[in-house]
Every structure is written in structure tokens, then in C-alpha cells.
Length: 439
Image (cartoon, rainbow, N blue to C red; front, side, top):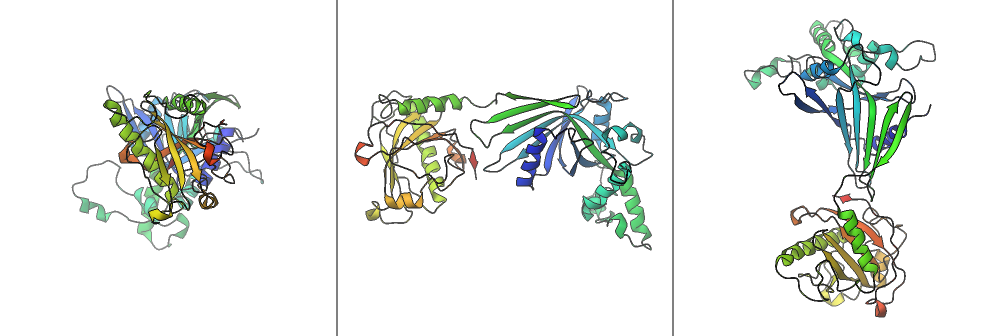
């Protein structure tokens, strides 16, 4: 059978974000009263697939750590395949074009050294990959030592030859007597008995943690609308379903803003405040408006700054008011060369939404592709150019103190609109929503 779709997506995410090799492992300390959840960061080491349809996530741990008891105490023995769940893992992949989260729920199996009391509990045959080309069965002990040698650095290998993690320490200086680095088992000098003893002790404590997923969830925040997909293991098959993403209600708010923008009676001068064009916002709404203009200014500034251009000309938010984007550092007398002018056509108090309409764009600005050059901020084809009458809906703007994070929710390109007719609301076509951008 083919590998499940979640595994292909996860492999691509890890390839595109190779530094994202750390996930969060959650367990429950059932010995406490009441039980206490425990969480820690774990480094992913590799994947092992007994069969193509059953990928396993492999990490490492010290057999003396408290999480071992937490994992084993929840496992009924003998373990029925696909029944017990003793842990969950959350794995985050950041990136302007990625932003994906994976959640795994399943059974974490512990593989200690041969002879340890937990060794017999590890389902070696069931989780072992198929025999190699020579017909030899998979050797889990050899795999454990291989990971110790090839996946661990010298310093990390030495950590397994130290006292029990979490045990009391009188002074920080006491740790200076512990081994700092340990070589691979194959690189030890035959005459170095002390290092041999350290490696032997380290291998007694070194264990593999093998996660057998039962359910997997993938959340894609790099696309808008966001996507959420779940998989559940059923025998040798993975049942896949698409579910709703639990996010803010801003999606519907943005849709409302776009609808208002395309409506000839409300595209300019009408907003969620129900004020006439050019009328200043006052009272409690003024505070919200001040925040929106701050978000809007910063969003525009950051995007244009990506190609060395930035300026925000509007200090107060008035419905129907205009602002300009232009070359940074140029004299105001040269504003006619390379400036994009836009109107504030709607402001959402609760939805934190603002719609910007481009009303003038010179040839210079079009050549420079003022905004469209930054593909990660706009979802439309990067070959397209910003045209007069185009609308940009900015949604989910963050607090002013966190302006570096923002979302261009959608890009609406109505087509060619002349400068003389730019005040008239054009017919709009909504393009695919864009991914969230973060600095």
C-alpha cells in the first residue's frame, strides 16, 4: 500500500523547513493526585516504516526520565495494536509559505537495551520493517546503537553517562566532573578504558521512543482559508476527513467587507460605522479607528519596504480619505513619479478589517511592481501587476505593538479602471485568499 497522504505532506514540510526537527511530547503523570499533564520538547531523529502505510516517528530519551513511567503506566500489556494511546505530539513548521501544524495521537513504545525490564514490552516483530535484500530480519538493537552513533552529537552522547536526570545537585561546579563529550562506539581507542566505561553506561540509559500514530491532524495556516485535515488508522487503511478550522470569525467579516466593496451603493463612504464619506470617526469608535489606521499604515509600509519603498501619508482615518505609497526618501515634489494612491473605503471595528482601493498608479510604480512583487503577501500570480481600481482587503491586523505580523486576506482585481473613473465602484472578481505572512 502507498504511504498515507499525511506522511507525504509531513516529509515535504520537514524538507522545506529542515531546522524544524523539534516537536512537543505531552504525557499524563497518573501517579499524581489529581493526574498532572506533562510536556517537553523532543528532537525528531528519523522515520521507520514497517510497511508503507504505517510510518513510525523515532526519537530518543534517557530510560531514567519520569516520562518513561508516565508512558508505560498508561499502556495495557500486552498492548493490542491500535488501541492504547499514551501520548500526543504537536509539531510546528513555521515559514511565510508553510505555517503548518501536525498533531499525532498514538502509542509511544520504549526500546531500551536488551535485558531491561521494558525491553520485552517493545513489539519488535510487529514494528520491524520488512527483511532486507539479504533476507535478514530487522535488528532493533543494531538500530538503537546506530542512532546513538549517527544521530547523536558528542555532547549529547555524554549526557546519557551522567547522573539521573532531575536528581539533586549541590553546586553547579559538581557537574564539571561528568564527561563532556563521548565519541561513537566505533571511534573509541582500545586503550581508553575510562571512555569505554562511559559509553557502556550511556548505552544502558539510551533508549529509542517510537511513536505509532493512531490519529493524525494537519492544520495549514499558510493558505487562506486555512485548512484542517484529520486521518484515523483503521486496520491497514487511513480514513481521511476535512474538518472546520477553529479560528476567529474574521473570515466572515472579510467576506462582508469584500461584498460591501463590490456594492455600488456602499463601496466608498460606507463602513461598519455607518458614516458618510469623509466624516471623521468620533467617540469610542475613534479609538478603534486609530488602531485600524495604525494597522493599515504598518501593513502597507512593511509590504512596500520589501522592495525599498515606504511612506504613509494619512494620519487620521476618514472614510473616503486617501493615502499614498511612494519611493522612500524621494522629494515630495517627485510624488507624481512612482506613487500608488489608494482610498480607505471601509473600516471594520469588530472585524478589524480595512479595504484599500488603488486609484492611481504610475508607469514607474507598475514597472517596479510595488506590491505584487512580494508573492508571499498577495495570492495572485506574481506576473500580474497592480492596476488602478484594484482592491486589497487587509484583515486580522494585529495590535500596533505587534505590527510585524499581518494578513493580506484577499486581492480583488476588477480589471482595467481609468484614473478618471476610479471613484466609481468597479465590478470585482475575488482572487484566491492569501497565506498569512510573518516576519
